Length: 164
Image 1 (cartoon, one colour):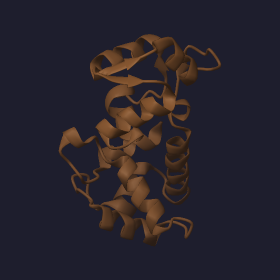
Image 2 (cartoon, one colour):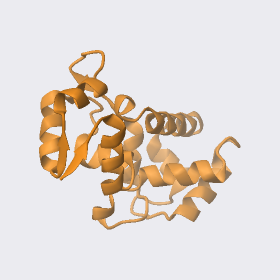
Image 3 (cartoon, one colour):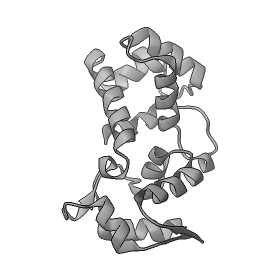
Image 4 (tube, one colour):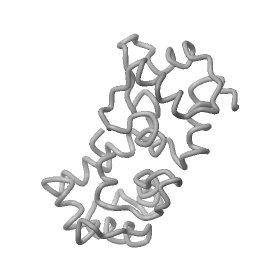
């Protein structure tokens, strides 16, 4: 059992297990991608995760400091939230939908699996110059599922993370 002392430590523990906090979010914390996790949903997620010993009330108060009764990806990891928001906005600024962005920019078919180099190359050709190679590699990593899924390639379904 790993002792979690606060939100940064909690994110680190989940990133160690799931590769990124984005993968932890969509795999364990908010698998339905509703982008609102209530206290009871969070408690159930912690129970599913197992192996984490945390002061639940302290951690909850860090996730929901405004006492709204829920927290979002922005509350959980504001940096990741900003990165995916920026990427989504740029895609939707050029393409009518994420489905068309996949079809016309990232992939060629719904079942296509995209590796990092292909993702970076295709996005570089279609998006603004603000998206450097390292930025796109970071986005690719955020879109990847958790390692236990056994897939190191991005598929169209992975773009659902951009909807939060």
